[in-house]
Image (cartoon, rainbow, N blue to C red):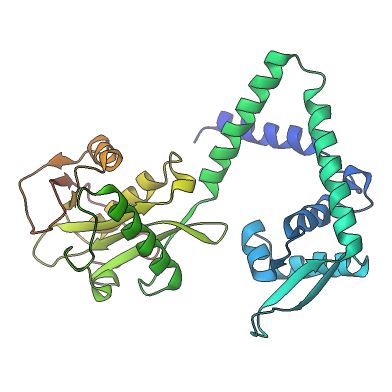
Length: 307
């Protein structure tokens, strides 16, 4: 990463914060700073769980509590136990005054956007909107986090269910987990393997599993990425991370199999240095088998299953 790249990002951040009014004490002239206004917007007319707000906005629990207290003291929100009967779940809803303020904030946000676009020509507006959409997607990509996760975790299970649903839709004869070669949870925890979870604002958006066989190459399984983040390089990041963990564990190569209908996955594997090899397992849904030689690594990555 070069100094020029870092300087460009910093310069962009300064310009944006100034132009959108993030430095003002009263965002959009509504009497409260940007943090409170952003939180009020995120709560919205439908309300939200406090834990979900914290994850979605990436806020520290203490800071979020202070923002909520400020909105409560202004009579804009009410924080109470959730309606599901679990006292540990807190929900926040807008009051009548809060809904009126939300409407004004919505209108002011439209006005701000129009003030940014207004001085530009038609061509410049299109260029700016296109560039903003691209920046948004790239920033979203930078917000995706990868971390090992127990395969029995509810988020991991949600990813695996989504994975199975997609395969059932895309495979010629559907997908039946009882027909596919099993991947036991015990094989996906150290030292036998790892289950890697990708999250965006706390929500699961992808996964991948690594089996560290004792007398055979490591094997990648269950690589899946949600449609909400496809095209952002998340699949390649998961694949690269799993390869690194396999190399750390002392493996010199890694293998995987895939179905002929998963053309994007096949493209990813080939562009990542995988070469097609003869069948090495009895996976009922596989049409292609790939292998890749790994570069040895000298130091373990955080959370790796070890050697």
